Image 1 (tube, rainbow, N blue to C red):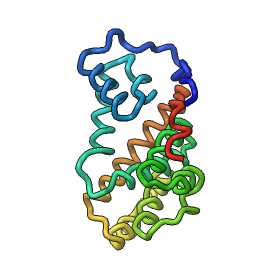
Image 2: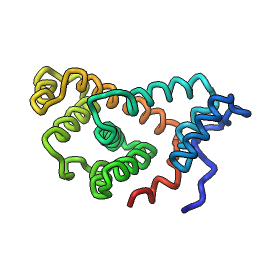
Image 3: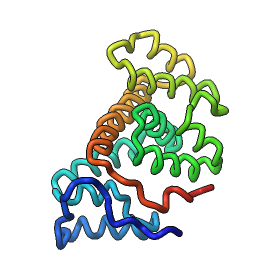
Length: 191
């Protein structure tokens, strides 16, 4: 495994030291379950309030109760991040798609051009909606929502698709603005 780079962002914002006990436990849990502490968490750890806000929203959208599968949520994250050319999220969430799906080709297609992937009608409609929301959110209209309903998404699911896409549109901009670097381990994951 490549050695981890020490530079996480282009900003000089060191992590709070020592981390509060609850934050340290969260980082330890990440290390245990993922084999690493994602650099995005380290990047926010200069301000524990910002870190807590980020993790609360992320955990709700990506891990909380939803009609969307974990894979579907990760696919949305990658498509949005690909459109926005967010280096950190393309690498990190591309790795998640490869791992969850067991399909390295799907992970690569999500990063490069989701339209090249073998997708079912439900996945395609979901990703088309997320892409439109990313490129031209003011142009989303009822036919776009109807297209999602037509392939089986509930109104709650549509809200969740919008929430995941909206979150990654925001975090992509922060990551790009501060030149957030992905953990080296993501590059080789699930290949």
